[in-house]
Image (cartoon, rainbow, N blue to C red):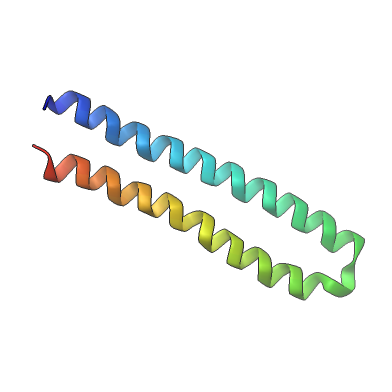
Length: 76
């Protein structure tokens, strides 16, 4: 395979994953802050659920990083 196409695929994979992960974290954080402002008594539960959601969102970005590193270093 052409090395340039592999590098392009790796770059696009991590770019889209990081961008969409940032968008997902931003949207979920905004909704969580809005719901904490509306119901302050539920803030602890909302915050812990938000942290779990952020962990899962970041895991997808880390998977994309692993895939892009595999593309770069395995396919030569």
